[in-house]
Amino acid sequence: MGLQDKIDEIRQKPEYIRIRYVWMWVSISMVFVVAIWIVSIVAQNKKNTASEITPNPQILEQFKDQKKSLEDVTGQMKSGFQGQGNLQNQN
Image 1 (cartoon, rainbow, N blue to C red):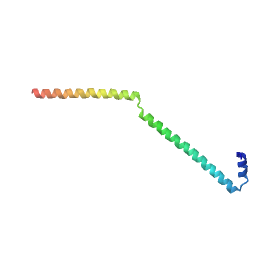
Image 2 (spheres, one colour):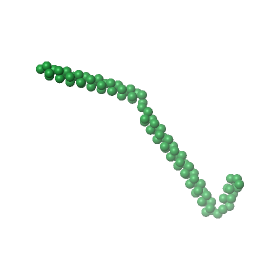
Image 3 (tube, rainbow, N blue to C red):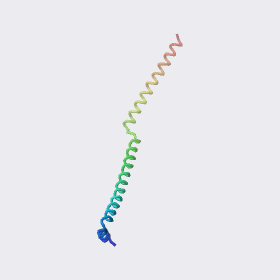
Image 4 (cartoon, rainbow, N blue to C red):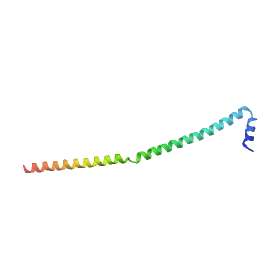
């Protein structure tokens, strides 16, 4: 029994039966479309998450520069406080 035979068989059935076939195939098609939609949303979210995790090299370099700058300032402040402590001890 081929597809054309099945279509002819359905055409001979009453209208309410043909309407059932139509809604059945609409439902099956919608399930298929929604499944593809959900898979694509999940894939897009994974892609966005992966790109958020991968750091930008320029940003990393800026952070390294800022870290070095903060370490320099911290070192200067420590030596300044130690210098003040030495001055107070001498007085």
